[in-house]
Length: 97
Image (tube, rainbow, N blue to C red; front, side):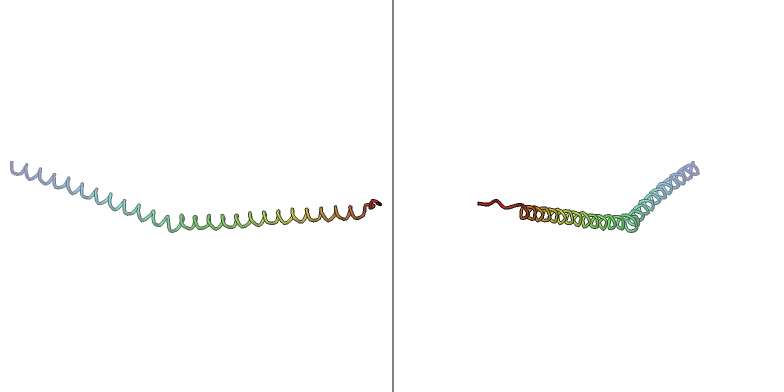
């Protein structure tokens, strides 16, 4: 009878050890997940965000440069048109009063 109780107690202790080992393994895995997330942030996510930001700023600068060039060209064309119109009007015969 005592041997059976001892054997049962040993079995329960072994089960508790197994439960504790599993809990520790889970905790180690959770810590590894956190470490990998931090590594991913440092090596991939942050550099990718920085590159995205850099490319967006370049695209914005290019967009504003193109807009400026279009406005400049439009102003130049309007000036040229007005200049040509003045030239044509100057060359037309003037009415005699």
